[in-house]
Amino acid sequence: MNVTATAVFIGLFVFITVLGFASARWKAGDLKHLHEWGLGGRRFGAWITWFLIGGDLYTAYTFVAVPALVFGAGALGFFALPYTVLVYPMVFAILPRLWSVAHKHNYVTAADFVRGRYGSPMLGLALALTGIVATMPYIALQLVGIQVVIGGLGFPTHGLVGDLPLLIAFVILAAYTYTSGLRAPAMIAVVKDLLVYVTVIALVVVVPIKMGGFGHIFAAIPKDKLLLPPPTADSTGMMSFYVSLAFGSALALMLYPHAATAVLSANGPNTLRRNCVYLPAYSFVLGLIAVLGYVAYASGIAKLPELAPYFAQYKAQFALPGLMLHFFPSWFVGVGFSAVAIGALVPAAIMSIAAANLFTRNIYREFVRPDCTPERETQVAKLVSLVVKFGALLFVVFLPLTYAIQLQLLGSILILQTLPAVVAGLYTRWFDAKGLLLGWAAGLGWGIWAASLTGFQKSVYPLHLGGMTIPGYIGLYALVLNFAVAIAFTLALRALGKAGMEDATLESDYVG
Amino acid sequence: MSKPSVRPLGWLQVLLLAIPCVAVLIVPFFNRVEPELWGIPFFYWWQMLWVPLSGVFVALVYRTLVVKRGEGER
Image (cartoon, rainbow over all chains, first blue to last red):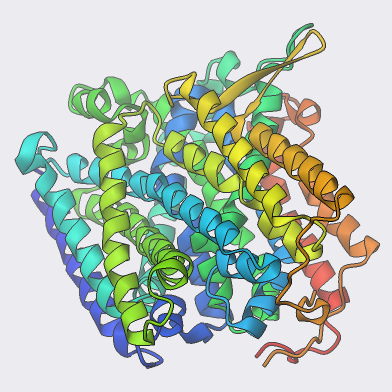
């Protein structure tokens, strides 16, 4: 075991744990209320929102999953960069409208909004369930990140003893989320970012210098990995997949429950908008980390005898931790690994809070106990946040994957199917709730079927269109089907004069 | 309470927001090695370049939308 690194790692972990519990007192509010526990009282200003959204997006996905895909699959893994470039203009254009209508009607989740907009508890239920289930694999991705660095410290990760460190991290996460709500990840996100920036700057400066510059690194990458293969006469190949992954991921991000949580906890729409100007700073870091996947490849660390067993166990996921182990002194490995682990805990906390908000608001209060007190509501949310994390743990145990990024892509296939109800709903009340429900069901059904064709190992579907094969992201194809069904049924219901007209919101509630 | 101190997006704003999106989606255009920059293939530096540029475009739109600074931030 790496004693120095482990000591630093545990030290930093204890520090953020104390911070997590202490944060309950920060900007003190009555934590018995859901919007206090689950949205931090909607009082987060520009800075905290920046850290919180950053904590949402730049997670084990960034540190473990993206470099892993670049390391293993080459240029395709770089889709994460256009994805994060696409996100902010879209958020800027769309989400302030959600903020304004949610603020007016005290909506805590996107499902709250849809329920009010269409007067349909069933549609709210569909959205809530989708959000909760889609979040679990995404949290699972975070747990994989924690698992990889714990393994990298030299702990055994096989068997019952091996699960112990992950379990401890898991319990700590659960405990401070339970007591402090959204304030805990918001405060820890600040520490996390400091650690991440220090680690990434060190990696990006130190390692390429030791390897003779970026030119050398790219020169060592085989040509067929460096670029996407050109399209052939009868197939658009990887290019269409790349574009659809970037575009689909960006659309999905806005719809994840935790994105809504971060967005709605901002103290105003302009706080959000200004954030879209500065958040690309994170994307730049993501790009650098993606390139580190190549650095890991070019340095040949996967073949070193001391690291080869890790690569055998964690496969490409060990690319970034492996670089740290090889190039950093022990104490700094501790810093880097804790950056990865804390960078995974923060979003896992936000995600479980978001899923808990959904369950409480749109399932429990809607269908089980409509007359429950605010205290009871918050109590249920706290318990559900535990259940969701447990569900994520099951994904890690039962769905072994070559690339952890697949967990996020699977979740996104599901969450994308809520787009017509949420995003179209922000602009028009034209759609009928039943049409949207049917579209949602069709999109989900087809999407899950298409993913099952690959044994849930890949998220590409080869669409055949007039002699051409257009491989694309399943989530995006399912969304097209979803829209088509929703439009067809809405048209039919309108023609019959049976389309629902209920709407709890007013045109003037939508600003921006 | 937030005051509606922002104008809705006009076609100019939508266009400005769309430019960085299109720039990183035209894969056939940037899927090549040349011209390299400090040994970095075009594919990589072109997409990285659009990270800060997208921030600039969003900032431009922000300036055209917000009527008075400071208002509507609470």
